[in-house]
Image (cartoon, rainbow over all chains, first blue to last red; front, side):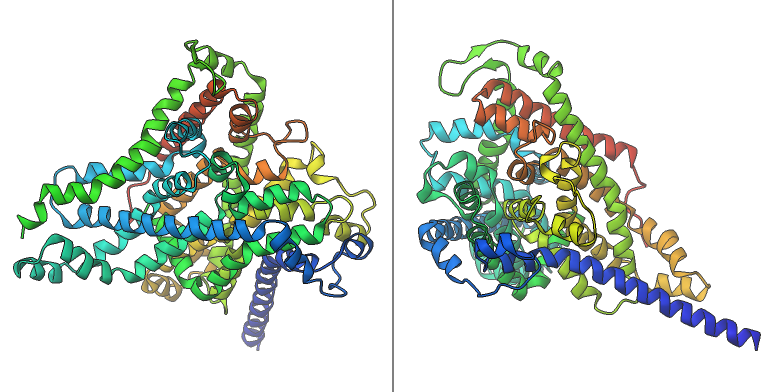
Length: 286
Length: 292
């Protein structure tokens, strides 16, 4: 009798414990998500509604014209396509160069490979503020200031360590037999790399690409420092300027913020597993 | 086999372009920062060599020390909040339904740019129309703080936004490490009658100590070089109250065109970051990776 009631008590305690756990976990989820929902709502409101009514209310009439307005008159269209262009160019360049390096380090035989790998890895630790003035001077001398090329090169160099780190983990697990057989058959190194190894790494390539894409899309300091004219600015710097000009127009600010984060949210919706994988791989292997 | 895969020309062709890029954009600039730090220079005119004057000035510059203090406070807060993230990850690694989905939801803010996050939180903290103070007023707080424009609340306000941004990142890292623990170990402990708390504390945490060390380094070094969010949210204000080393460096170099002194600050930041990493490596030295 006493044993039975003790077991029953233990079970109900356990159930209450789990209920509390789920409640807390749910609360954290609300804390992480609700600010974005709130942002979405105020991006559809007019100033009268934002300043006159409860911030938690749904928009009264959904002002999609906030989006149309900032897209053209706020220059968002230019910033958006600059972000796409710079992000895509840098991602492609980074992934190709990093794959070549990883292949040479893990597959080819040479003495300095460990040392060269270390050189790439240490790059991960360098704060960009410690290189900003010389980089500015370097691009100035090469006439690359206010030129997207400087941004693409900087993104490539600074994302290379992380990209190599993630690729390295995958290359180490790849079987070498196919490559060895290809060598026996007299295949050239270039053909082995481009036709055998590179295609085998597609899963990890997509992981590194999405991680690089997120980092480049969100980058602020390089663009803010090296780009001065509006026609080359990216979204992160563009919204910063925009907000400076439209301080009190909350609806417009909300719409620009939404435009800058929606592509990332869409990518996350379709590729969340790859993103999670990339984040985990990039930090654990380091 | 060996002959084909040892071709020096091909190795050079594959490695050199990246190495040259890294050298030109990362390694040479580090050295140049230290060198420019010995100049009096506005970025346009002549450089004047002034030896270690900038570095001496830096050691006596109260703004530098105050921003260093803020950077270290952020590092301390960030490290302490790791405990919170670890606890959440441990809970999620138990028998929780929908834990994968929860982890992904927690991660979402991490994917957004610091600029967008900063602008969003500026609106949340808006003293009159922001979400936070509206909420506080509804529950009866009469004079809620001005958050970002109040010297006494600005750091904590920034820090809450930082937690919002990074919580998911660390939870993903811890969860990935926890998933690597063989299920047989946990089952064996359960059979021996270990409680979930004991399993978490005595088995799971020690097994991922290597990853915990990595996250401590990430949190501390990340805080030292923290910039975007603070630069956009407060610009280091009000009146310098939330200045950090990187934002101070940026203002000196690209706001006041003190390229020489800005470089010295950048070099000090580099030394601090490397030194801190080295110290944590020493202090938290584990017996390499635990094998199981």
